[in-house]
Amino acid sequence: MAKVTELVAKLAQPVVEEAGCELWDVEYVREAGTWYLRLYIDKPGGVDILDCEKISRVVSDLLDEADPIEGSYTFEVSSAGAERPLKRPSDYERFLGSPVAVKLYKARNGRKEFAGVLAGYDNGNVTVTVGGQPMTFTKDEVALCRLRIEF
Image (cartoon, rainbow, N blue to C red; front, top):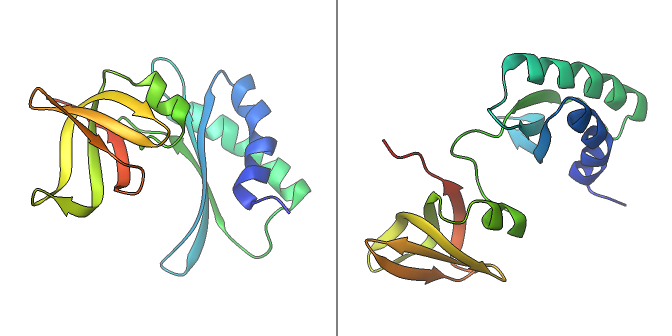
């Protein structure tokens, strides 16, 4: 049987695209005893509350019909955010040359977080230019890689 997130993504994808947006991610998580189903969307120029509301209404009705989740949950639709996590190889390719923050499971050289520019991605390994020097982090080292806004 497919995962909840995969089923919901298939259901939501056409609705999101019809609204002129891109489905960035689907998350089904338990927080403080409550289950949350979240759709993260994006579009050129950014997502606004009207995009979220429009998609939420249609997908909510589809979820009620398909009933892919047993039990209760809270459904949310939101922007992927300016500092969104990069998860898929296509995310890394799309944002090559962008500022990122990489968080590691274990410290390297006394640090667990490195900020720099995304310089490469190869089979799960992330290369970031930090202080003018390329640093490569293996897939097993990286807990999170996300876009970073510079001020």
